[in-house]
Image (cartoon, rainbow, N blue to C red; front, side, top):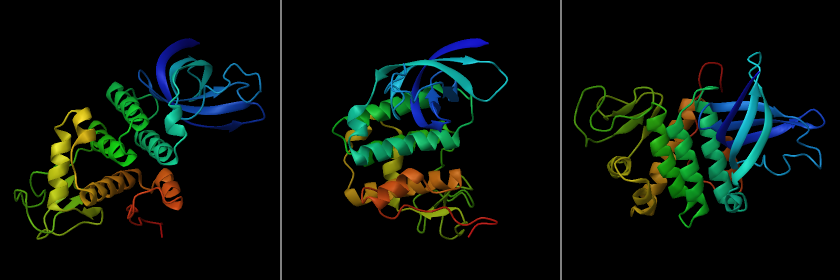
Length: 264
């Protein structure tokens, strides 16, 4: 039985049996890790409130190598991000970030840069920046790090340099397609200004991206487009964004993935 220690963020948790918890972490050294925290639901458990979602801490776990689930030994809080959990809009966006990483990454696939982006984004949600802007900067960088960086300089079908009329962002093709070539089933319409803004955000430092001046309607369009791209990659709309929409805190027009075979 091997013992491991790594810094990690609590992505989600749920009850397991009468006393235990099944917890999912996104860790710096091991990527997505799922494990059982024994007796975590007892009033005097050593875990107490350490396993709250979005909490950053030091995770220690045992791995027998015989199961996908590890045994969580302890989790020491480094930063609880209480301010994020106490604000519904910030909590929803933090949950969306964790959901995207969870659903788009494989178990035990370490990606330190993605872990760093998640922690940086949670810190951004604690600050004064609007949660929608933090989520926009997260989405733009997460797509790149996950290997889904869309090409924005020319039409992927005919090679026509951008800008061109009728542009769509085609997630299946992996970038922009012009109006003359036609949009595929996985394409999302996007304005020239939104494309230019995304290109600029890509090249900026994180701190500059949080304060970069963008017209509200363009920020909304770009946020909705990237939300839609990630939803199509996952194959389902985000549970976190649906929750925000139901509470009036989400972005209008969040794109749903198109029906696929066997879906209606």
